[in-house]
Structures are given as C-alpha cells and as structure tokens.
Image 1 (cartoon, rainbow, N blue to C red):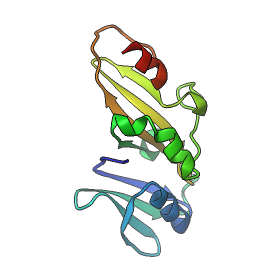
Image 2 (image 1 turned 180 degrees about the vertical axis):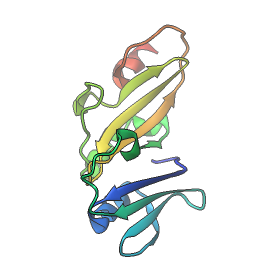
Image 3 (image 1 turned 90 degrees about the horizontal axis):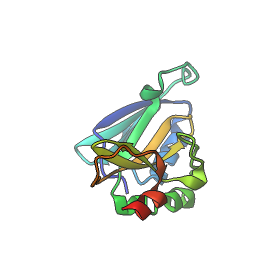
Image 4 (image 1 turned 135 degrees about the horizontal axis):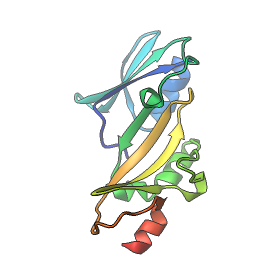
Amino acid sequence: MIKGLYEAHLPVSSLLESIEFYKKLGLEVASQNEKLAFFWIEKGRSWLELWETDKVATPYHPSLRHIAFQVDLEDMENAKEWLEDRGITIRTAFGFSPEEQPLVLPNIPHAHAAIYFHDPDGNSLELIAPLKMDCEEELQKMTLEAWNSKT
C-alpha cells in the first residue's frame, strides 16, 4: 500500500505499542533499541524513526507531527477498508467525516486524494495519492466519490 517517504521522526509515548501499530501498516522494523525504532518504508532508501519520550504531550507545530505516505490511486479506492481491517480509525479532516473519506484536495495544477488517521500518540497520518487534473478551473474539496463522478 505505502509507496514512499524519505524519512520522518516522531515522538511516541510507548515504543512497543507504536511498533505494533506501524507493523499493521505493513512497515518493517529496520532496527530498534529500548528507546527508538527505525522502520523501513522503502528498504535502503527511506525510513520512519520513532523516539520514545515522556515529552509527547508537549505542544508541537502540527507539521512536526504529520506524515503523508504516498499510495497509488488504485490503493486509495480501498484505503478506508484497508485501514478499518487493521483496526485503525479514520479521523475527520477538512470538515469531512470518516464516512466521507477518501477526500480530494484540489491544488491547481495538481489534486490529491487523501485519507487521515492518527497513530497511538495522536500523530497525524495521511495516505495520499496524486490525481490528474484535466481542467484549469478552481475546484472545491470533495469526496473521492464525487471527484470520480466528475472525471
């Protein structure tokens, strides 16, 4: 499902709980010790590093606690079920409820389909798939279902 990311670092409150969560997403542990774990996203090329710390509750800018994993559009069509099958709850994003996702975020000249969820420490995670846009008009955010009916 997940196709790419170079690196990301996140604070976590329970390394063992977080390891199990990220394994559910299909990521492989590259190495770990008692306070940190590296997960391969693309073996030998990109990774996610989790640091166990008691500072998780400290406020962070949201972008420091957000990771977007690239997926293929075909996988995005089944992303909701894929996450739910793994016991992962989709969260409301940009005013779209979990039932309304995946959603489309139009940014001319590109658009993306996305679905949002949290890890066990509340870090914001996203599955995102690029979409082709054949028009130059400004579009509104919408569900992927509505996007598919327009294209």
